[in-house]
Image (cartoon, rainbow, N blue to C red; front, side, top):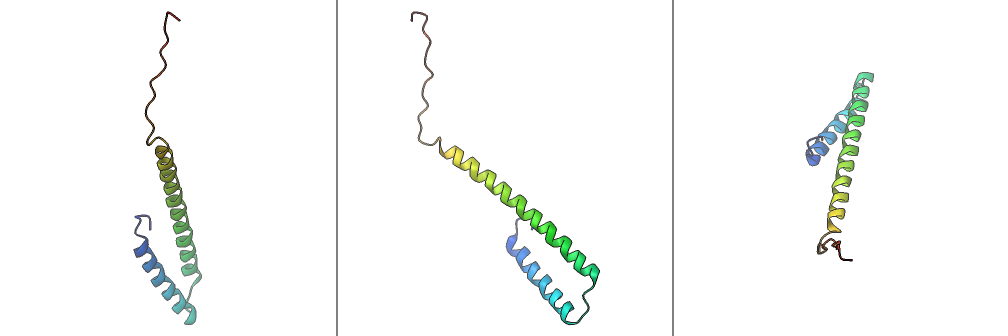
Length: 83
C-alpha cells in the first residue's frame, strides 16, 4: 500500500479477509492473528491518511499556481527623483 499500488493492496486485503473468514468458521482464529490484523489495519489507515494529506498539498499547490496563469506581470512602479 505504501508503494501506491492500491489495486494490488486491495487484492491482498481480499485474500487476507478470505483467510480470516475461514479461520473464524473453522474456529482456528487466534488472538495473535487478530492482533496482527489489527496492527495491519492501523498501519494501512495511517498510510492512507498520509497519501490523502500529500494529495491535498499537491491540489492546493496546483490551485495556487493556477491563480497566476494568464496574468501578465505588471512592472513595478518607478520612483522618480523629480516628483
